[in-house]
Image 1 (cartoon, rainbow, N blue to C red):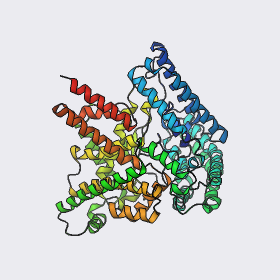
Image 2: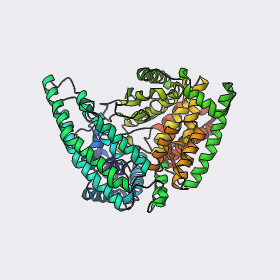
Image 3: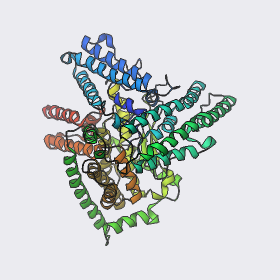
Length: 607
């Protein structure tokens, strides 16, 4: 799972809400003289197109400075987004304006790359505008995954602190947080009035997260984290002054705002929380879920079709898991086998540091093997680091993208506090997904595609990006992973987990399953522990449809690979095929299929 500050396409993430709405309207890497398109040499239509991209980009960076920071643009690093009703209205107006301007551009006068960019731009705007009337749905910003309650500590982990000016920007953001919290409370109240309140189990997790943040005192506070890594260019005396100022602002401004947020959530908001968060129980919930499914999968598949696909894939993968059990000569039941794998001490590290070392060793092994499957590799580096201490021991490992300007590497975030529940046999597939050849390889490669417009280099579609990471897991066999049968089983367990999501997400929101039925199904089919699956189900409740993109995307990529191999025979080159998938940035699955089909035709015509 990517924790992209570069924003997965969910509309539930606090300040990322409207940044998400604009991810297809020019969001991308900061323009630079080396990468900016030479508009003067373009045709009039292409000049107008790129001017629209640039104008949209600049407006987005000003409106969503958190997004700018994440991409390495620090011009607005002293502020937070304005999410007032007036500003939100201005955003929707901008979307409509940009859509009208894009439709006015003569597509026939553009080159192939620009035509694709224009099509993606228009498609994205049209999709986002469909959510404008779903006000209540968009006010569901508290979530067990990427919720508003976690956004500020996550942002502070990415702010640069190389010099005094950047440290001053971080101080200014501490002071800006109370206003941002108050705006969010206003929006949550609107959702409350419209009958859109997060479910009780989700709010339990939200309050737990806030309590963890607020309980950490002094320099252990997650809000103080940037001031622990100030650059050497800042004199020691100045660093001491800045740290003192940060502690004062956290005490006097940040924590009171945090308590206001917690009091509101625990009080009037929680009092109205439904037991179930199934979208079928909300006003207009069925339409909201249909839109979520369409946008998260980038397909026309219905919830019923996806549910059936999930049942089929779960059955297939469970059969493969049974074969691994036989290979290990296990005489007992599936449940007993899983219990053995999760309890035998030989399968676990004895410390968080050992777990971290293990993840790093796997990453190093994969880095060395990548040229076997990829004709070109990104230059942007990646590393493995520990989650900050305030993160719960049961939180999932995640990936944080690099800065688009190369000033920050990509990171695999390891939960070292949870080392007692991280079996060794589950580690390989996790690194392949979050690191390489998964999220980091795909993300870093996209950022380096200088011939593409900026927004396409930073684009994100769950079905493409998470589908790629799921597919990347399966490449582990060719990269030297899963030689141990237990690790092979761990790989299959993660695969069946994602297949079960297809069943459960649609079961909850389309078939109105109760939470317990969803949890029972996940535990029975995946063999994962109940607490983890309860957390997962709460994620599906609070971010409807998002979990569908993983397996749907992977299945499409495998389908395209098999098609290319069948049609090209000996001419099929897996290294070149992977570059076809990666070298256009993130795209909807239908666009990806068209690109692969065009490549197949070109390869077949070569002599």
